[in-house]
Length: 500
Ligand code: NAD
Image 1 (tube, rainbow, N blue to C red):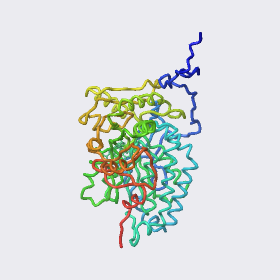
Image 2 (cartoon, helix red, strand yellow; image 1 turned 90 degrees about the vertical axis):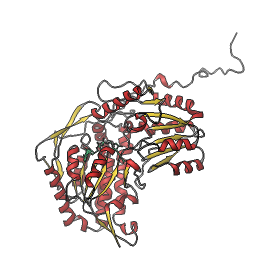
Image 3 (cartoon, rainbow, N blue to C red; image 1 turned 135 degrees about the vertical axis):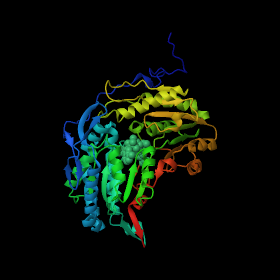
Image 4 (spheres, rainbow, N blue to C red; image 1 turned 120 degrees about the horizontal axis):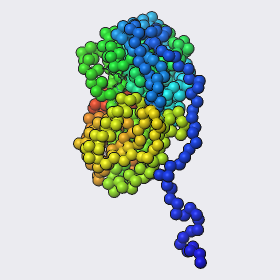
């Protein structure tokens, strides 16, 4: 006798729930890197030319996915920084500051178009040097980099509309220091508004990710940008410090850790130099019980696992309403299990390599701290490559406000989860941090978005989405996340003197 009954469909898939943990297999889809030609050694780019470092010292630039050296980059000394600042000063006085805005705009447009032209090469190089998945460097980093140059090219001849009734004068030579998590994008955030407003630049990229900045220098040369307008000096913290303390710098734009930001702020005090500081974060992502759960799960994945969690505005603290917490965490774990960790150049990869050995060790240390603090750790079963610095997507539950993993920026694919009962409790917990860079609110109710958004002390708040960036939108922090804004019209202010 057949066991089919009227209540039970005979479809063979009836009992087959989606089993995310079975591990769907994807064929490899590697992006070619054969055409990337790297020199053995790179000098600094000063006054329109590549020059060797004054002391002849170099640092290795390591591919974090293979642990092999890609090239050597110059380790900048005080003399190198001085040469770059002098070149930038000369270019400022003799050429760039006197050019009409529409002429400056033409150069910036040209640079933007060339970034688009070399987009594939830049994306591959960014992934090799920094470890980020090619999907992200190809679809996010490089398109946004070009978009920033296009956007600020548009402002170059319209400053009178940006500052109606006032005259905007450039400041002079800008020293710009950037981190390793978005090397090209941070370069664009810094260089595009500085050029649009008539300033010249000495930029120091991060020591682990300088190769795309050096490729960008070649693009500037090919674009015919006058010598000395952009100078790139590579090196580590000491090189950055030499730049900050150079007497002929007029403005410092720094993006990096709060720890280094504080050192820079102290050394600039009383110097008369202008500065903006874009620092660390520990963003809260708040999920209310009326949120669309599947969308919110996807949003949480994007908030913390995008770019291996090396994102200053990452939603690294999840606050989920108690009534849906069990369901939400179970769905989140299911989705996490589908994340592919591996070769950054494979187009299927969701989570690439941790940027450096130092950052890898730092993350592992935080995982130990979390366990020692009594939190419950959950890591996916993702298969990891045999070499390279890779970390499984991780979450911690059973955590409290006083845990170090809840308070300190880990800067890796590690999420902490707390629950709340009322909107006030969510806001109280979200704001209980020295940082104030980002936040997220997930709910079906517009009024709740506005009420919660207004109460959060953070520079950027996303609702029903996360980690969305646009050149027209200002970005920056409160509290220990920094001072000043980059992006949008606001991003022009730090680069001008306004006179009436
Ligand atoms: P970091 O502070 O160690 O280094 C940042 C840059 O500063 C590097 O180029 C480094 O060589 C240089 N530097 C180091 N010591 C210096 C000194 N004493 N003087 C001058 N320069 C010095 O930070 P990191 O580890 O490269 O980057 C990660 C940090 O950056 C995280 O805290 C992250 O949140 C932050 N970040 C912030 C934003 C933002 O917009 N708020 C964006 C990206 C990254």
